[in-house]
Amino acid sequence: MSYKEIIIEFFRRDFRSLRKHWFYAIIFAFLYGIEAYLLHEEILAGHGDYRPLIFIPPLVSIAFGPLVGAVVGGLGNLINDIITKYLVEGKSLHMGHAVGFIANFLGAYVVGLLAKDIRSEQYKSILSKEAIKDYIWNTLAGSLGMGAVTGLIIGLGLWQIGKVSYELGIRIAGSIMFWNSLFMVLLFVTLPLYAIGERWYLKKMEIEKAILTSIQVVRRPEAKIADIEKGEVTEGKPIEREWFIASLRIRNLTDKTLRFRVEIIGPDIIQPSVKYTKKLAPGEYDDITFSIYPLDSGERHFRVRVLPWSESVDKVKDVIQEIPETLFELKYKARPETSASLNTITSFLGILALLALLFKGFLDLMSGGPVTGLTVALAFFAAEVVLIIIWYIWRKYQLSSAIRAR
Image 1 (cartoon, rainbow, N blue to C red):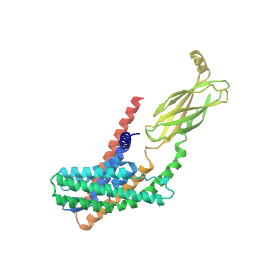
Image 2 (cartoon, helix red, strand yellow):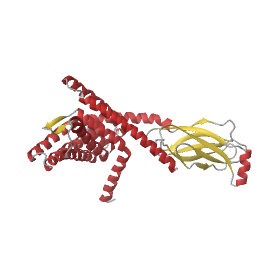
Image 3 (cartoon, rainbow, N blue to C red):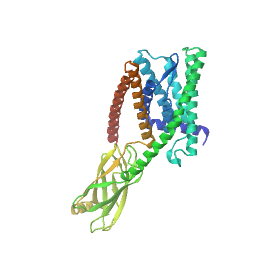
Image 4 (cartoon, helix red, strand yellow):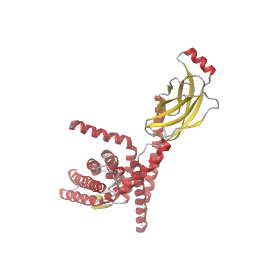
């Protein structure tokens, strides 16, 4: 494979990851933007600030790839600027904020390019020598990306657009490099915690595996010509909007050698929806397989109609009149599209958001001023609720589109 093909495939992988996690990237960006507003301090006369939680975009880059982390860094910084300048100070945005967006975007992207994957299952221990080496390397990558790259772009960018002099631009760049690199030490502390959380979620998902691979018969007819003895997931997992392969064991309960037509009817996408067993002697069984694409998570029900079948249409009519159809109801459990990494980082950033909110509210109360941090945080909590509602409407639209496409 040539270098050009490798680079193209790398960018394709990045875009696939962003397309899969775009909604979560927006949520993480909102969290980063709010937390950057709640916990920050100006560096040099209103130009640049240091942020204790600057490690959030690098953490997302390490977990989900460069482009997802870059969106969190760039968009999160822009959200912070909108809160600070537009909502709180009542001022309009300017080109300097575009420089900040580009700087945080590229800084987080560089972190993802240089970082090593943190996968808890690959370490013998969370604090093994190999794991600590990866933590140190990723911390250095965070310092280089969000420290050196981001600081340099902001300092020189503000100088290029005429916002500051060259000397002040260099001072701003150096200050951002120093403070961002200093607070990146928190990334070294965070990565083992992230690995511990991921390992816990992996164990939890392994426990759920037995539930997710079973297909249960909910209702059987009293009189039946065939029985479904076993249902199981043979390949993949029942995950919302992902294909998996299921298998049903059909046993002939009649005293005749018959072939059966099996129809699968349900709210999800099922391919093929009709299967035929081989000719079964009395008491024999056949395992049929089919693919299911769950359109939602939770407990999913579907029906299976079993008909006696023959190669001749006339014989089919005679057989059906003599032996009636059999209708079963089955169920399986599908979980939402997620991952141990996503669960871990969502929980972790959610806790950080709560701590930042409480810390800022406490400082506002102690200073005797208005609780602006708490007010803004509550406003953005309401905004996130609106985002969830929009997401729900979008999912319903996808569901209806998928059903029409069947």
